[in-house]
Image (cartoon, rainbow, N blue to C red; front, top):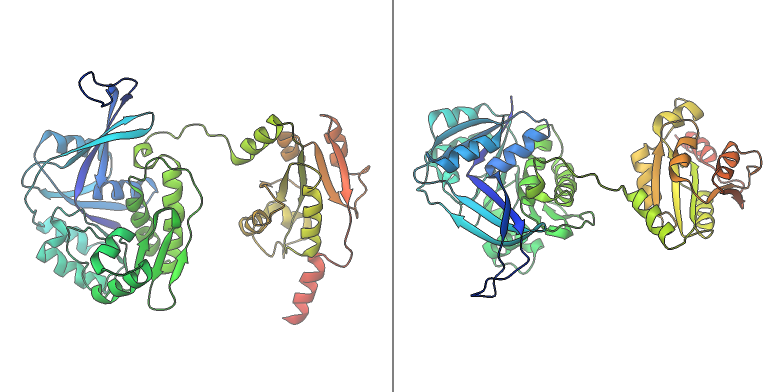
Length: 440
């Protein structure tokens, strides 16, 4: 049983080259073409993204009988596809690109509205979840398909990614995913909050999420609206972010996630997708990227700064931790926390620990203004992490003796030193755990 992505498929083409001169007859750049790359677009991209995540997925679409459709089929690779006939020619969006930026886009191809075949309808009827990826080419308006989707929406998650030229979602969809411009244009509302509420009522949808680009998304699902902020990223090309968002949400709902959990995952995945180059980078091996920590250390050292590190479990963050970390940060120009992994904590503290998993402990630490980066290590001690980081200063609380710490000799090996900062007695994770046990 699989996710079915049903909708209009396009062929995206990247024409990459160099643009270092202008036309002699007009102030327009000349693109010296180096490479052409065909990519799945529209519903085909959404299905390809889900398949790349390891999801069982079937693309239900209509394809023309032309060379561009052959290129699209090749770009889909091994994605399972049930395709009806598209009357006319394949829609192509060709981007002229130089140095990773789009100079212009050329759109061509024209078709009449396709009709859903019995085989296409059978595939939708067998789905455990459906994503309708509407690109305004007519498939989502097919009456038999809409009747079937209305029936299925009462039994399985149906996510509808609408298009301004397409029809409204069928009643009962679990989640509809318009972007802010689409939502405001469709309703005339003054803001995304009002637009989401109006669309949820108009479409009789379980929930509507308005995507807000760099601001994340706003979820309206019948209670207080849920604002889901996006991570801060650098993105040159937003192409494909909506497909990534909708595909992630549909896959999460298929696996049983709540709507707010699905939306939060979709925001995170869309941001990561754009940070990796968006649709233009999909399907190509990601370049070797400097890690955040390595970049931080290189930057600090390039300006002659001092790298400070400390370590520990930081299981239940308390005032003693916060004061120690603030003191450590004041000793240099950045502070990296070496954090014991969950298995490492269990080996050191026993089977009942950690109280909080490493992902959440790291999130809390990164939220402190004193902490610049967190590195999770699996061993009992942070020695391997320290060899990688090579900090100038290693900090522990004054309940330790700097001369007897095993890390002290390691630091001396590259000219670093170990120091202690004031200890705050009476404040410890063990004391908090004991107190909580008494309350339970």
